[in-house]
Image 1 (cartoon, rainbow, N blue to C red):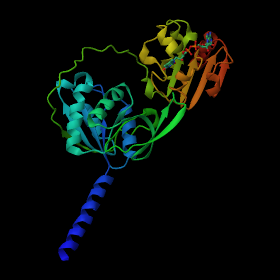
Image 2 (image 1 turned 45 degrees about the vertical axis):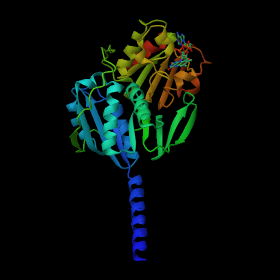
Image 3 (image 1 turned 30 degrees about the vertical axis):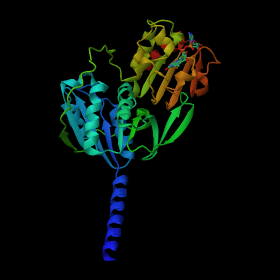
Image 4 (image 1 turned 90 degrees about the vertical axis):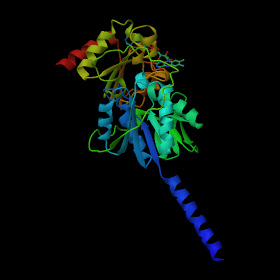
Length: 337
Ligand SMILES: Cc1cc2nc3c(=O)[nH]c(=O)nc-3n(C[C@H](O)[C@H](O)[C@H](O)COP(=O)(O)OP(=O)(O)OC[C@H]3O[C@@H](n4cnc5c(N)ncnc54)[C@H](O)[C@@H]3O)c2cc1C
């Protein structure tokens, strides 16, 4: 009888331990960086990770990224920085990073793995999820609970609340939906992780980056964007002059990119970048649904368009129906005063 009671008690304790283990959340944030510099979206992702509850670790993998690891160790709320440096991580290829993440997952059994929903995160996370045999959730804008997330569908025209029952939740995070975590005040330990053997399936050859002194588009406080109405690449100079007065980043519609006015990394919208600055000035942009998907969460929207029927006026807080070639130089001149 005593043996039976003991057995039942042990079973109850076992169950409690398992359920405690289940409740213990731990999140791995994959840091995005360019070796020397941390990409700002990582800080927004850390804020999202903190909302999940539980411990937050950051993985910094690269070829020369010690500075970024140091930087992340100072972010409050990060309890540990996992640091992996190897030549195989040149170009941060998903084929090379995935085995490293799987190895870390084996060691630390995280309940959540996340990264910013940038080109880097979008490239890497679904591959990791496939290897873990779980369905990932992309571009989340809200965390309701550790297993329930909100994301947009149909180019931002519907909100979809998803409950995820996967054993490991793999999430990409919309940077503009979460504040950036503060950059100082924390004191996390940096732990070296040895890199698994290189896969060698793909090779990073080179990159051609658009050089600019202006703030980065997705984290700028002010964005001035131009569309087909600008008529040529040379005319974008009008927007650069205005942007300089406002310390703004310059964006574009797909029509402006397709016409060759500006490079495609400036595209705002469903297939471009998602921005949510304090102020978005749309110049010569009609406001197609696919463009609105990338900017309609901006705090204040200003439209400059000569067509009063342009859909952009339906989301604009302030609008001027006028010729941009007149209004933009006037605005720049006024700001210079
Ligand atoms: C699958 C898919 C994905 C897409 N993804 C994106 C995306 O990510 N981003 C994006 O932007 N688009 C995207 N598009 C394209 C989108 O549908 C539109 O074609 C595009 O946004 C139009 O760009 P626009 O507003 O510059 O050009 P237009 O629609 O041609 O508008 C130009 C505007 O300029 C105004 N204008 C002209 N001259 C002047 C002047 N002198 N002064 C003032 N105003 C003037 C006109 O009145 C007009 O409203 C996508 C489309 C598809 C099908």
